Image 1 (spheres, protein in one colour):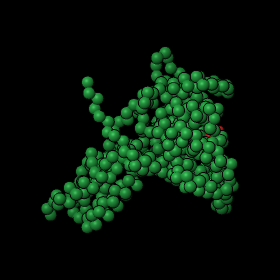
Image 2: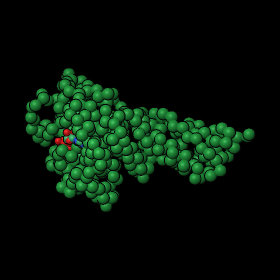
Image 3: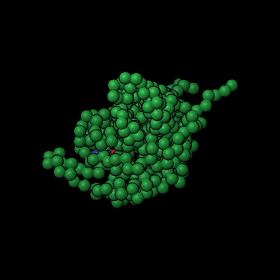
Image 4: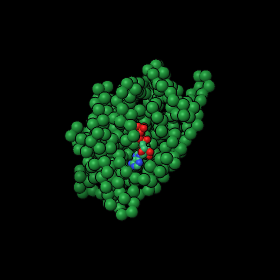
Length: 358
Ligand SMILES: Nc1ncnc2c1ncn2[C@@H]1O[C@H](COP(=O)(O)OP(=O)(O)OP(=O)(O)O)[C@@H](O)[C@H]1O
């Protein structure tokens, strides 16, 4: 059979128009090969680790788009690794592709649980991700991850973050003696958080997930302005009162022009371990409805689950991913987050970095 050069060229052109999930720009520079193999066109595309959580979905999307355009052909798409290092962000110099604040309008809704779970899910998918606990009121990440201790650095040295299964981890809890209450005021908070972002040796990251302090007061507001945020994710429970606070949190981020990437509903339903019946203890669907009304992507829900709480207390959050009653929910949220970021990038593609001259 002779190679259908014209068709292969048309396929390349079509691929070149599909947006890369990280940059939103066409894939043309990431097409590794397009070859005919019998009746099938075999395609290899390179994707960065930023999109690791949605590789399978992206492959399916590319196959379906090509099948729609070239209905007489069959396609087999393979995704390979493609490296695009992060550029330093703003004045803090952090080498990271997306800095995401996990926030809540009020305390205790599961913000830290969501932040830790998202971090683990992204890491498991193959992205490089760091976790920063900026909850100055009650840093709970050391508890949830089971990583305790103190971080220190010599004069002029970078602070070595803690290692949580290959995830660089930093918390205000690692800088103060356990049990000690610290009253954070403006300049001190500014210097502590800048230190965390600028002076920690994060390495090169796809994502930095930040567990924010709860609420919409001064601290949350000034942190939102201090950090080089790509966007925020708001966590709330289905209760009416929690929803009112979530609306306030959305308002706060919008006021300081930080995009709200999406909403997570936590403690959405309780599945009885004895009878498998589902109970909506805090109500149902309110967060999803609000998200829809306000045009905010709904990233998913986390069920109220006794084992999830126990694993949080025991610092064994990683085990949630082997539990089929909660693991798939957590993975779905990470996929929704990356999908939403990809959609945002496609709607607003980044400009390519030009080489520095001189
Ligand atoms: N879906 C869930 N099912 C069961 N327990 C949960 C769930 N989500 C969170 N929890 C538990 O609720 C408690 C509070 O959760 P978490 O620390 O994540 O909340 P938070 O919003 O970060 O709180 P704070 O405002 O104090 O920082 C923890 O003990 C956690 O294990």
